[in-house]
Image (cartoon, rainbow, N blue to C red; front, side, top):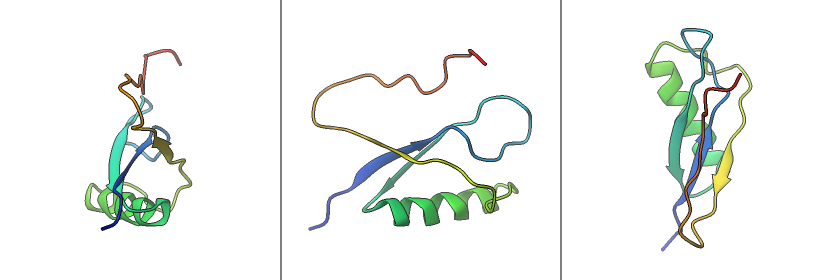
Amino acid sequence: MSTIEIYVCTDHDGYYPVGVCSVVTAGSEDEARRLLQAALHEHGLDETKPFTLRRLSTDSPRAFVLLNGEY
């Protein structure tokens, strides 16, 4: 049984010059990247623009602030 990991991205393409945020569950970073690229494409966004994936640790309870409005 493979482990599912949680990845977040806050710098992919978006419609307006405001923050974006996506969450991806996948077995690897490569799979997460492919899944997010497909989702961006489905939403009419440019999936070829570079973006960063960050894997979230689920080792202990924790809150993750992804976008706090400070730009």
